[in-house]
Length: 177
Image 1 (cartoon, rainbow, N blue to C red):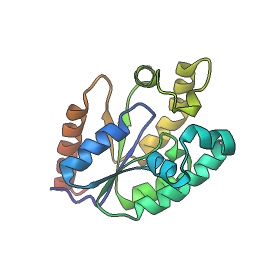
Image 2: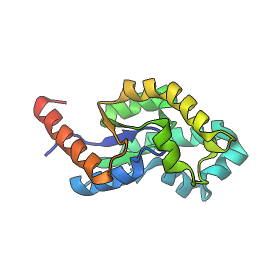
Image 3: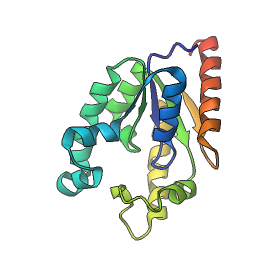
Image 4: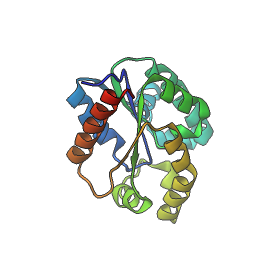
């Protein structure tokens, strides 16, 4: 079907990276991995706890090591954390080891999807929507820089997004992505 050894999904929190990634992996008979889940598995604590005790810098160091390890695997669909693109080495590793898909949605859509989620330390603020807008302004160019495909998840169901990705991967493979 496709030539991609690995598929890496980037994008903001609430874009649907894990949900889409799971279904995409199933459709391709690939292994699904989630970098945030792997960090939690390795540390034995949730992401907010890591932020509380180590700060964002400590979390990003852990995330970097997980990315190094996971991009070395084969035939995986990897859902990354929203901030993975901040680190230039992460961007280089992702781009070099697979097809990178940027799942895009507006800060307003992100807010609607994450409003009740208490596992989002970067949204622990009085104005989470403003914070989501700030993060998007900073990170969107980085997501686009690393992405082979950009797919909108705005007001779309998971199966629709997965079908579009599969179609576009097939087209890209035929065209030599």
